[in-house]
Length: 67
Image (cartoon, rainbow, N blue to C red; front, side):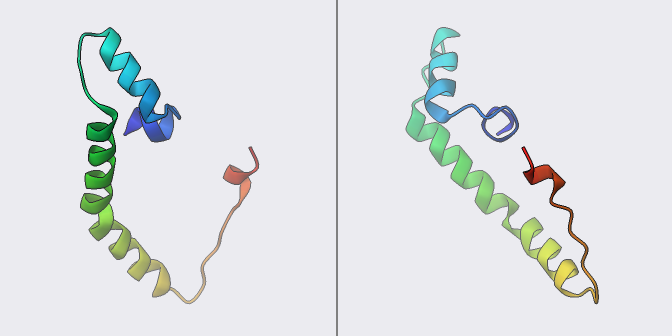
């Protein structure tokens, strides 16, 4: 997940990197892992949404999106 989301490595690139290291991990397996991670994180997303929605005022800063 770090390589995909923080380092911006597409799954086909990760598949190649693992292959060079002698690990045959198909892209479909990597994609399943991404999906499973999303499912596992959903309770955290739901809890965060509930906290944010419950506030009277929500402040946002778009500077991270100015890349």
